[in-house]
Length: 99
Image 1 (cartoon, helix red, strand yellow):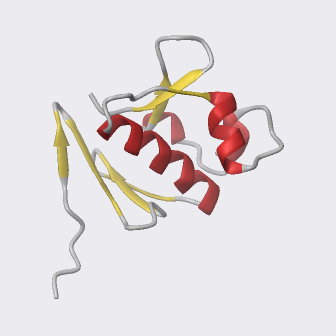
Image 2 (tube, rainbow, N blue to C red; image 1 turned 30 degrees about the horizontal axis):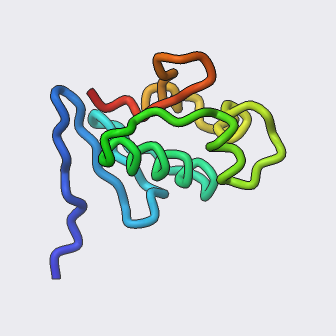
């Protein structure tokens, strides 16, 4: 049985993840995420694959059932989260940092 995680190449970005997104390899760095952080990355990655890469902060937090009004609160213990998730073109939106 092959347990390797498929590597996806996106115009200069390298991204792969475990089935539950708790482990994410992004551009040579391994990120171990909490359940909520993994859900955010999964939401944004699925939307990227769907061709609709940006989601509003409020939508993301609502999907998580979070009481916070800031996405950064979900990533308090992950200092490098802004390497994976970046602001979208419109204020209050975010996308996965895959080019």
